[in-house]
Length: 329
Image (cartoon, rainbow, N blue to C red):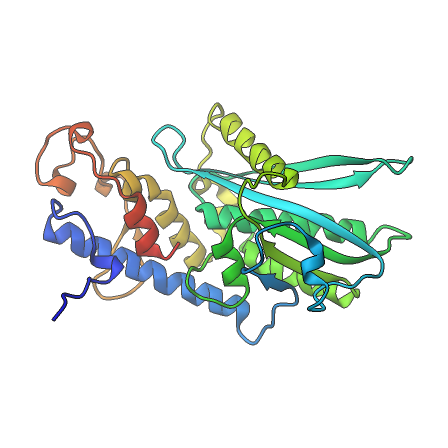
C-alpha cells in the first residue's frame, strides 16, 4: 500500500522540535479557520456580480468574451491591467504594492497609457492580497469613469496574471484571500463585491480575466508589473510603519482583523525562521492572542526554535513554500 503524504500543515522541517511543530500546526489551523470565517461573512448569500474567468486563452483578446455574452458590442469598453507585487527575500520581506495600467484618449483621440500605484502597508498580506488590491483599484477607476457625464461605458475588463485569485472570485475555494489588512475593517474582497455590483447595476458588464504573466505583446501587463515593482524598490528605502502602533487600529474592536494582522506581521518568522512571532497558539482551540514583548521569540540565537544556540545564518530553514501551503495562499 502506497504511503500517503501528510496534510500540508504537518510538513515542517524535521530539525524542528516536536513542540515547535505542534505550535506551527495550531497557528496555521487557527489562521485557516479565521480566513474561512471572514470569507464566508463577506460572500454568504451574496452573488458575485462580475464574471471571473480563470481559464481563458491567456491573451488579452477581448473578442474571446463576445460569443459567450460576457461583454456587449455596444458602447465603450474600458480595459485595465492589474498586478500586485510581494517580496519575501530578507531585505524586502513583507513589502507589498499594487498597480493598474490602462489607456486613455486625449482631445485629439490619440491613445496614451496611464498608470496608478499604491503602497500597501508592510506585512499586511501576501501576493494574493496585493493582487486583490490591484483589482480593487481598477474597479474604483472604472467607477470614477462611469460617473463622468456623457460616458458610454458598457464593459469593464480587468486582466490579471494571478490565476489563483481569479479562481477564487469564480467560486473555487482552493486558495482564499481577503486583501491587505484594512485600517477601517473593510477588506478589499468586500469592496470588490460591492463595486462590481454597483457597476452591474448601472448596466455595465464587469469581467475579471486571467492572462499569462508578462506575455510578449501584452504591454499593459508589463506596465502594471513594472509599476508595482518600482513601488517595492521605493518602499525598501523608506522607514517601516507598523500598524500595531496606529492608535485608530488599536482602538477598533475587530478581533479577527487584529489577529490576522499579528499572524501576517509574523510572516518573516514563518518564511525565514528569523525575527519575531507575534502570536501564540492557544491549545484550547480559541483564536491566537498577541504575545507580550518579553515573550516574543527572537533570533539569532534561537534556542526555542532550533533547540541549540548556533547562529541562525548557519542553519537557516526556508519557510517560503511551507508558509504558502500551510495557509492556503
